[in-house]
Amino acid sequence: MLDNMDGSKVAYSIGICDDVTWDSFMAERGFDVYMYDHTIEGLPEENPRFHWQKIGLGGIYDEQHPELRTLPMLLEDNGHLGQKHMILKMDIEGAEWSCFSNLEEAYLEQFDQILLELHDMNDLSRHDEMLEVLAKLNKTHQLVHIHGNNCDVYTMVKGMVMPNFIEVTYLKRDLYDFEEWDGCFPDELDFANNQLWPDIFLGRWK
Image (cartoon, rainbow, N blue to C red; front, side):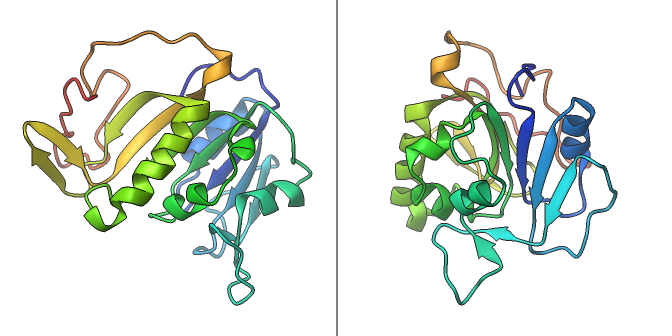
């Protein structure tokens, strides 16, 4: 993340499992964290700034699956429609593609930072959907950091490594000035997801 916590002090954390490390980090910095995961029965620890619901995220609302709501619906539930300078963290096991594919750009612009784990990057059947989503994200936000998750396989194509899962950080374009960076990934900010295996070396990944 960028060390800029001067926004609205509202963060959305979608996909929790049994790890609230990031959520606790944000709560310590004065953020109210709106947390969603329909696959768990409760949080591993409580915090007065945690606002958890047993709800998952989908791209289109289906009355047959009321446990899945869309991001605009969650924003409306919390009175955050139109609110700016929020932060979004999402790890929802591949459902992110449908979520962003069906999301209007105006909702993206409510978030200064967007932190994602992108799944199924080597699934060629989702190629067109992924390109559409990434193009949409790139209109409003700039990719500033990438890390390969070594808990899954990767593919090597013409000397370029493509992890099946990648962790990315996006910053809102109209808030910052950006410069080209010629360093290598992973860098000093990163550590391997699975400590028993070496991290995935992306090099000068562009």
